[in-house]
Image 1 (cartoon, helix red, strand yellow):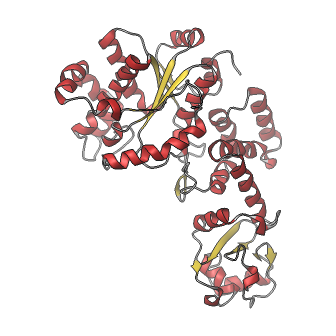
Image 2: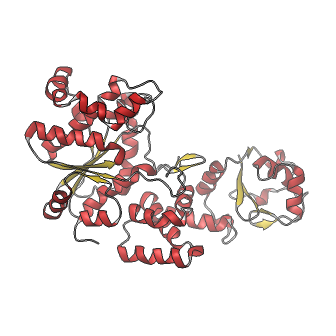
Image 3: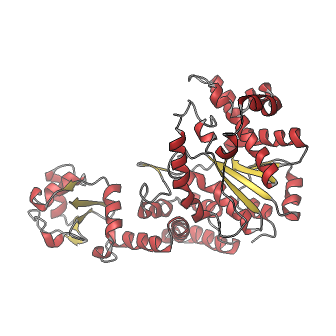
Amino acid sequence: MADNIYDELKWRGLIFQESGQDELRSYLSDEKISVYCGFDPTADSLHIGHLVPLITLRRFQEYGHSVLPLAGGATGMIGDPSGKSQERNLLSSDDIAHNVESIKSQLKQIIDFSGDSATLVNNFDWISKINIIEYLRDIGKNFSVNVMMNRDSVSSRLEGKEAGLSYTEFSYMVLQGYDFLHLNREHNCTLQIGGSDQWGNMTSGMDLIRRSNGKRSFCMTVPLIMKSDGTKFGKTAGGSVWLDPKQTCPYDFYQYWFNVADADVIRFIKFFTFLPQDVVEALQASVEQEPHLREAQKKLAWEMTTMIHGEEEAKKAIFAAAALFGREDIREVDAITMDALHNATEAPSFSSLDEVEGILSLLTASGLCKSSGEARKMVQGNGISLNNEKVKDFRYKPVQEDLIHQTYLVLRKGKKDFSVIKFT
């Protein structure tokens, strides 16, 4: 652990942009400050793309600073144009309120709210009280339209081929800037952190504080993450990797991190975990010398699944992975995990075994085999397993005793492809 939070963030590669570099390092070393990071509750769950700035807030906590995670109850109704080619669908106040409530429990997995060093704030509480005259006279007069037009989030939309930019979205920068001013007044907040796409919005808040009360404040962005192969971080064939276990089950969550490429794993360990430098260096050596063991990926997957879902769910995810590939008793996998795997593999459901002609029809219905002919050849070639037992006879028809938890069958083709079929 570094002597101060600035050096810790620098070693982890978490500082992308910052205002007043030398001054900020001294300030963070000499003072215990209040820092905030905002997120707009546009869905009823956060996804792993939100994690870097939120985990960075927790790092500030670890060094004795106070943190203010901000739910954008108001700005979420407006829509941030940053990084968007067209306007978002606007959510109702009821939808936003529901999303904020849903996300609170997820924040508690990341940030420590047990003491007085963390306070969840919602900008609806103060923005909703501003009248239009106050907004234009006291806030809007401090923003230069010329400067706003040059911000990337605005200029990219105006220069694009899409429908341009509405005034609603254009005002987002003003509202986010006012958030910083409000938190500076009410909580003595002097630092805002966020993703690098937020730099223009963040510096607008810093300028507003200076114009309004002459105080010094700072901004710092963390990098937006891309994978080494150029694909987007946090996305799979099934969509975003969510923190809500109902949207991304703990098994799939664990597997996402376990399947991180060697070229990315150490960088992600630095970004997302709290592992100290000596442990990270040992894992890096393992990647370089024994990459086939995937020790770094196992550690990353364990740390992240434990952080978001708890140790028990992490253990279940590890056990389920081992069981699915024949190293543990498949019948010991709990029913909740089985159901999540059924949903994740988009496997078929049947009302009863009477609907199933036999193993070949199950293989084609599950998509593991394209035809009955292929399924038959796979069985004859010893390439099909039912509940981790090799299927010897292509005419075999599953019976009631085969059902795990009286509900599921696990079919596997070869070593990696599997499907969890459900009988309701």
